[in-house]
Length: 170
Image (cartoon, rainbow, N blue to C red; front, side, top):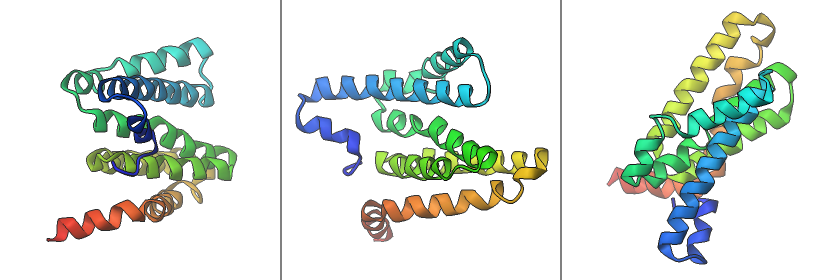
């Protein structure tokens, strides 16, 4: 996660303070993303806030905090932003949604936990499949948009991906 933008705070803060701030910032980012996605789907603002709080305090997140898995949390924090971006593109035909999904994927890649990038890709693919089957009007946008978004993210993060792939090949 050398090129992850949030890791710049480790240059100015002591290590313990930087780690604590990073945990806090990514929990806020995760909950805020879930809140925004819930609002985008038509939830009441209070229900959206509850969704964000529930996700940030869920069993999928909290054990990683306790165990000290910072890269897991940094990567998970972008999942609701990615899925919300895809849905914005599918429903409203806003290019900003597809761009947000690609930037979220790029930030996930830079955060350094590849398994969550893969699992988010699987979730996005399944979400696109469900949207394609359930809403025929999104058929031309849902499934065809997932792979290009991941390709754009890979191009944005090639400076970190290519040396990693070269090191893994040895």
